[in-house]
Length: 310
Image (cartoon, rainbow, N blue to C red; front, side, top):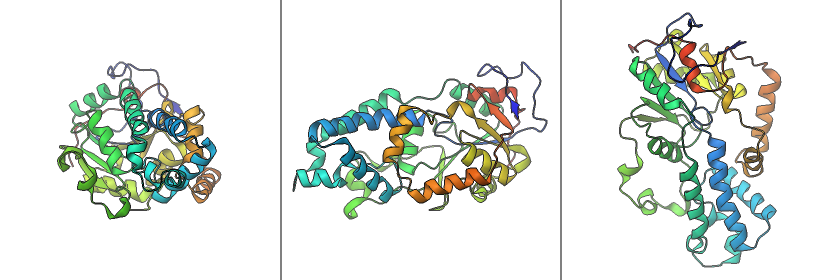
């Protein structure tokens, strides 16, 4: 395994490059690679959850069990209509508008999310330097479209990344149309410069075919591409199976803290998903080719970046 030396986020060039081939395209995971998704999710969800417990008087265990069932039904741990679909709250307030009853819980979620939503140190400077070099920047995430776009807009990455690939959004409840639930014009929620494309429904990492298809779609050549991600089982294994140079963002591996423990209790992952992850771990001894130990900017001391000619 090659370990990256500690590098200034934007210095690059101060030491000899390690990777011999020039890189013209960087495909990167987003959550826990560009920002701390677990911390963002935990702060927002915890604020909302504590308020729900306080206002409803219901036991935490009951709410957690119901929340997990709703998350699994919609295949996401970021479900915008969670409160309306919790059976215990429906039973406690028959015929009432749960959004009005628990509006302060929603406000707590949004406030906590705004306060913690930021990029990892050095990410913006590194992306700007890569763009200056003419490199193609592509994001690939398993987070669904709405919240992915929200984070890209709020973090001012719209236009800095050329493409974003994500799953589509979950279905809306009760046959609602999107214009019925949004307070602003439709284009307010859309990216203005970054091209947003959807991955096939049900196709998940570490499927190497998705990564290869993304490179074909953006006109990038495998020998000139690298893939950066924080998961050995999903990101690194996928890149290696696809024949693409892998870069492990080890600084984003935050799976031992309080936030990740709570996520496990209410996650949308089914038992089958957990078993699938275990099998990947058993069947694949994953050793990353390159490791970013302290930050995203260490890439600048590992690779020579050149303009994309796709």
